[in-house]
Image (tube, rainbow, N blue to C red; front, side, top):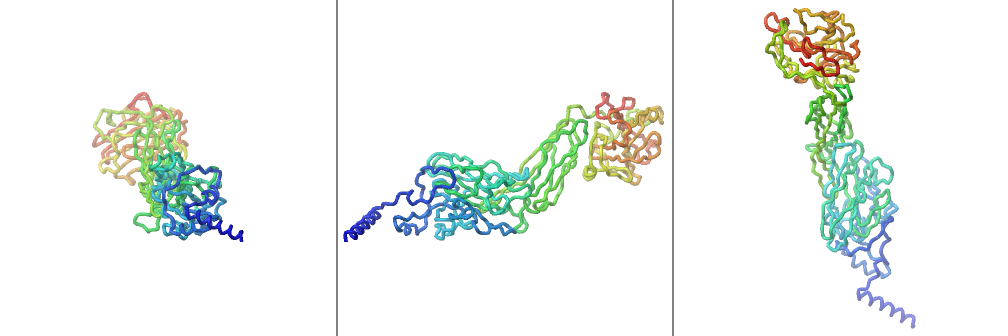
Length: 616
C-alpha cells in the first residue's frame, strides 16, 4: 500500500512540475551533435520562426521523450528523380534527416532564424515533414524560405566558364558577433550527387567564404569567381546547395550533409536562360570567345598565324566575332567572322593571320552577352556579363619595318619628268619578311581580301617571301578607263649577267633585276585581273608560279614561294614599282603613262627583311 502511495505522490510531483513550466534540460533530449569535426558554439535563442501548429500537442508527450525537432532543412531531391532534362538520374543529395545519401544526417540547422540568407527562414521537423508550417513539405524544391540567392552570373571569356554567386545575408539584432561562413555545392557533372571525388570541375564551388556582419544588419555578399560546368557545357538543371553557418566546414570534401547550430540551408536548381522568340524549353546560346591575350610575332616574320575559339556553352544558336583595332598598325585577317551557327556543346576554331606592324598593336573584342540573372521559386536562371578583352600583337624586336616615302613622286615612263598621278598607285610604304602559311591560311586570306592569282591557281602552303605594299589611296577594283600594275622586281639569282638591261631610252623600271611578279589590271582583258611571273631570260613568256596577291583597300600583300627563288632570302634584293596608263595605251602613245618606284630608280635595291637607308 505504501508503495502505491509513493508512486502516486511521485506522479503528482511530476505533474506539478510540468504545470509550473519546468522542462527537461536542452541537451538531454536534443539530437546528436553536428556531423564532422566542426565544434558546436554556444548560441543565443533564435528569433521566432514559423512552427507547426501541432508542436504544442507534441510537447505533451512523456517527459522522458525528446522534444520535437524544429530545424531548417534543404529541399534537393533525396532518393527522387533529379529532374535533369533527358535523363533518369536519381537525386541522392543528403536532405532527409535519416538520409541514405551520406554518412552524415541530411543538412539542417537546429536554431534557424538568427543567421539568415534572405528574409525568410522556414522551420520543420524534417525535409519530408507533412506538417511543414509553410504548408508544403520541402521535398522536392518546396522550401518557401529559399530567397537568399540574388544572382548567379557568368563571365564567358574562358571555357569552362566562370561564375560569381551573389547572396543576401543578415543577422538578428541579438545574434553574437563573429564571422559566418558561406559554402556552396553544385552538381557540375549532373550525376545526382555532390561528388567528393577528383572531378574535373570541383563541385564544392565556394569553400568557407568568410562573411562579416554586424548583428542587426544585412548585406550583399559576392563570391570569388569559380568554374561552372565543363569545357563545353554548363550544368543545365544542376542542384545547388547554399549553406550559411557559424562553423567552418572542415576537410577536403563535403557531400552536402551535416548538422549546425545556427544559420540556414537553401537549395536551388540552376537553369539556362531561354532563347528569345524560340520554343519555351529551348536554351539560349551562350558563346564563350577565347583568344590569346597577346601574340609575339617571331623575328624576321612579316606575317604570323594565330587563332581564337568559339565555344557554345548553352543551346543551339549563332554567334559572330568582331575584332576592332585600338592602337598600332598591325592587321588581322579577318577582323570579323559573320554569323556562325554552333550546336550546343560545339566548338569552332577561328584561324587568324597577322600582318605585323611597326609597333605593338592592340585589338579589342567583346565576349558574352548581357543577361540578367533571375531567381524565383527555387530556380536560378543564369545571367551573363559581356566582357571586353584585348589581343595584343607584339613584334619580336624594335627594328624598323617599313620603308617610308611620304611624297607624291610620280614620274613619266618616257623621261622621268614629274607628272600628276593617281594616289592609288603612289607607293608610300613597303616592308618585307618571311611567313609560314598553310593552305587553310591562304584560303582564309582569300575569303577576306580580294585575291589575284596565276591561272590556273595553286594553293599549297609553305614558306613565303612576303611583301607589304601600302599606297596613298585604295586601289580601284574596276575602272573602265585605266589599266595599271603593281610589280615586284627581284634579283632572284646570284648571277649579275642575267639582269635586265634598259630597253626604253637609258632607264627602265626593271633595270638591275632578273625576275618580276606583276599584279596586272586591264579592263579589256579576260580576266581583267591576273598575276604573272616573268624573267629577264624570257621576258615575253609567263613562267609558272605559286605566287599570289591579296588586296585590301590601299594595301597589297604579295606572297612568293621561297622555293621559286634561287637566292637565299637574306641576300635577296628588290624594288617595287607601279605603272598606270589609259585604257588600251600601255606605252603612253596617246596619253602620258605614270609610274612610281621604291626605292627610286638609280638608288640601290632594297635588302629583303630590312629597311633601305635611301627612300624613293
